Image 1: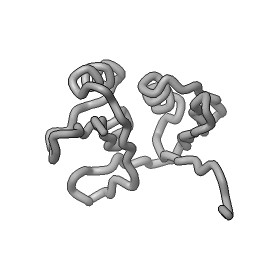
Image 2: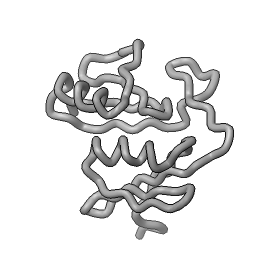
Image 3: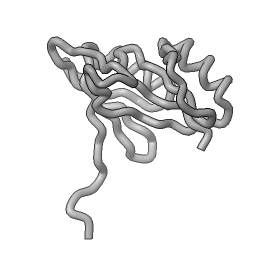
Image 4: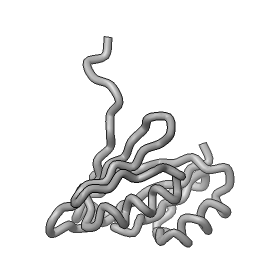
Length: 118
């Protein structure tokens, strides 16, 4: 029997509402916004939360001067189409691309995330 249920990923960032807007549009999830915290929820129960932190430092990837701390992998049907869409939302394609079945991007706060075919 599980000890706990429904884990939530919490992401540190300088502006929770702005970062939740980026991921909300990418995933088509709805945001519940408070002063320094945002819960971004799917219709089926998953949740990603964003918390404001002072003196936020974006991760540096693939180097580890400032560790990436976490990253999200999201599944897409077509890498080119998905790339155009996330770049239009404010993502940046990273110069280091170590694979062919996925692409690495930085969200507007500098966190790496991957668009994956599988």
